[in-house]
Length: 143
Image 1 (cartoon, rainbow, N blue to C red):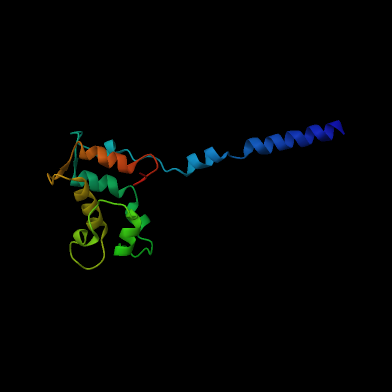
Image 2: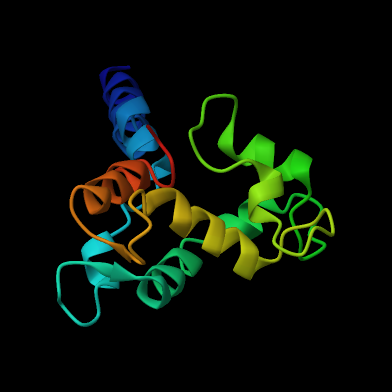
């Protein structure tokens, strides 16, 4: 009987150790942080629209927000992507051709202009800090 108890105890311990903890599962669920600094390919401490577009495109945000996978964002998808609280541009301001759907290029340009608060054509400090904050440890717009 003692051997049976030891075997059962060892099996239970092995199962417990093999099962991920809640903290481990939560950590694995968090996306890798976005390294906004890596987007600055010319290392000038600022992001041009081209640098931002290339880096932001790699986040996959457009595809995630395009819930019907039609290659364009409707106003509903755009609004749902941001949630209720946002200071980013209204859909109509980003929809450059006014067709009621955002292409990936319109989406990226709209996001870029939202961060380029002084409309200088370059995202630099303190704007660059806002980009880093919004990309966050939990992924895109986690704050």
